[in-house]
Structure formats: structure tokens, C-alpha cells
Image 1 (spheres, rainbow, N blue to C red):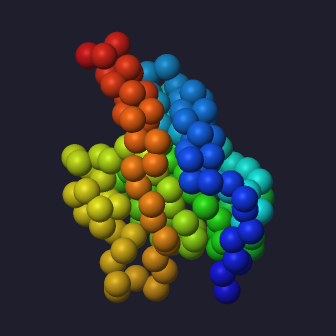
Image 2: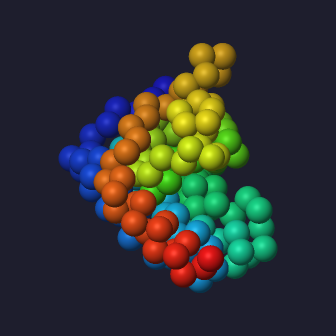
Image 3: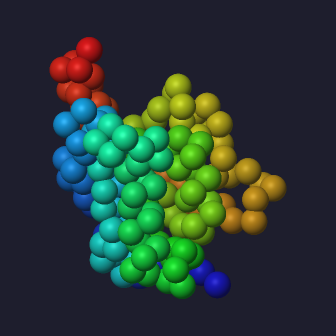
Length: 157
């Protein structure tokens, strides 16, 4: 059973927290930030990409934030009623995890035409064959999220 939304935060507010969380990414990691919010708008977990830092191909910001949120909320893995805000459109791994964790809402900033799985390249989260499909809003504070990525790649290429 899904918990109704009670937060007074706007999607722009959610993305502001995700933009801040991008600063948690390791020095050599792409600056992607993710924050999981409880239905009342309180922060359950936040993370930045740590793939390079941890040497772990699954250490995307979304996965790290979902793991921590599942530890502190719900019945151990179901994140019903929560909102995940992330600065970049999730990949297939992260989109699958969002569905399996039963996140209620996904709000993201920049679109990712090469690997995005929430509408760009694939649309994992809206596949009608799945038993759970989160509500999605993309392109929120997009210019700020793109600027984070552009600055990182300008320095690392």
C-alpha cells in the first residue's frame, strides 16, 4: 500500500538537495547526486557517485542512496511513498532498482541520451509489464545539472 504524499517541498527543492549531494561524489567520480525523501519531505538518505572511489561498478549515487534509505525506512527494502531526486537520468541498473524498491516518485535533472533508462534510450520505469511504476518528472533544474557534468568533463578530458 502506497503512502500518500504529504511534503510541501517542490520538485525544484528536491533537485536542490540532489545538486548538493553531487558534491559528495569522489574526486574522479562523475558528480551525480541522489537523495531519498520520506513522504513528509524529510531526508532519508543522500549520496554521490562513488564508483571510482570504491572500485565498485554498482556504486552509483542512486544505488547508494536507495541502500541507505532501505536501511532506515520501511520494512527493510520497500520504499513506498518515497521520492528519489537525482541530478542525472538513471541508467538501466538504477531504474531497475527504483522499480524494485517501489519508490513512488522519481524527479531528475539532466537527461542522459546515451544511457538513460527513464525515457531517453530506454524507459524501464514505465514498462507496463512491471507491477510497480513510479511517477516520473525529468528536466527539473536541468541547466544546473548539466553545468555540473560539463564542468567535470572539461577538467577530466
